[in-house]
Image (tube, rainbow, N blue to C red; front, side):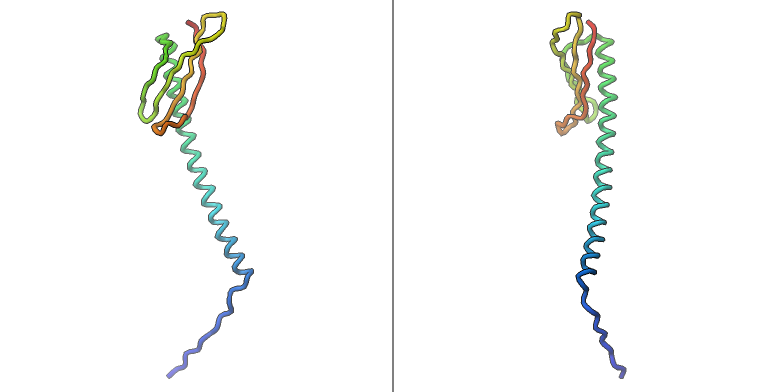
Length: 116
């Protein structure tokens, strides 16, 4: 019968262990950066949609001259319109528009001034 030779491998040195840990940390760091970028991109898209909704709501408010506080639900967003008193000499109205998502988080807001 043939003899089985056992080859003894040297144990891993401290340097090899540190290099392996550094490689693993670099992989985790790259993964974290990719996930953060993906998450912030989706938030930017939400913010753009919210800005478009505010523009539409503000245009409707200006055309209809409906200067009163109001709330409207569009898809997953809740649009809020708040009319504030002002101290201007001219007859103008300050309207604050805000968009809130279904979790209650403020996505975007704008202040607009309209003439009465």
